Length: 363
Ligand code: ADP
Ligand code: MG
Image 1 (tube, rainbow, N blue to C red):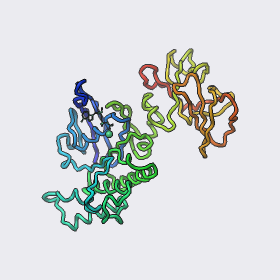
Image 2: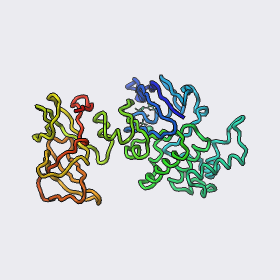
Image 3: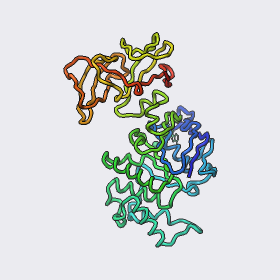
Image 4: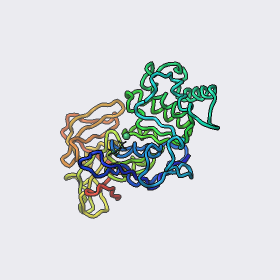
């Protein structure tokens, strides 16, 4: 089922009653989620991810705009009538019910032609449990399950009604690192198998990048960029997006274009066909090439071995951050006692941004 958001806006009265005023949690969103795809809503806390998800689910009303499932305008439909499955950060399972009863629960109140017999309900619960690989745990109580297993039950419960759209709000936040990795792969597999159009909300860029067909990067209720994860990483539209994606994060310098050259401090690092101006220069950690005669020279602080790669930590007076991180092949020869280190820069890993607007400058 294709999902379309058209000029979707949500305005809340401010929670700060004294200050008054209102919060534009979601500001004129327009995007289309293609049928059967998994899209990641990504951005820092408070940027409007949950609000967007709740409007897609029907739990929250739109202040203006429309949401379509396929060709149908569902903007005024209640959650029950939209055919969505919801999974939240905290699993919210019924503690006194078994896993099987928890999964079957959404099927209890089906009416009319949708009504299912007990046998059918059990069979559907078994199917959903099989899909998330907890079919051995059906008779247990939630308290007898690990966090990861509980979240699988919550996903099975969301899937049991065969939703047209699956909505996940930070579903992995309560899991430890290893389980988080495993469960996210699991969600990806389930989504591929069921082909249910899925919206996955997270503030974790790595999570969103790894799992999504398409990401929507948001900031303060405004969409910054939409695209395939790799495309957004390779081609950020502004400094915010460039900084939000990637670990270690992009290195940012205060730069200047003068007489057709880009300067970082005293170093002229590149020819650019631009008029003179101040810019931010972003260089991805993997964008550096060791070269004793390279265009950029930094003060060497330390070299961290990470197995496959080494991470060189250096500094430069023109850097916007105290340290600069460069990821280099572990086979590279590095003089750890040197005071300085010089690099060339890979042309596809360096980005320029307007010093005032922070919008990308193409050159
Ligand atoms: P996210 O999920 O990205 O962290 P939210 O969608 O929860 O962000 O919130 C977006 C903005 O809307 C925040 O500024 C938040 O404080 C505000 N907000 C969310 N829900 C309400 C509400 N019920 N009343 C007032 N403000 C709200
Ligand atoms: Mg949220």
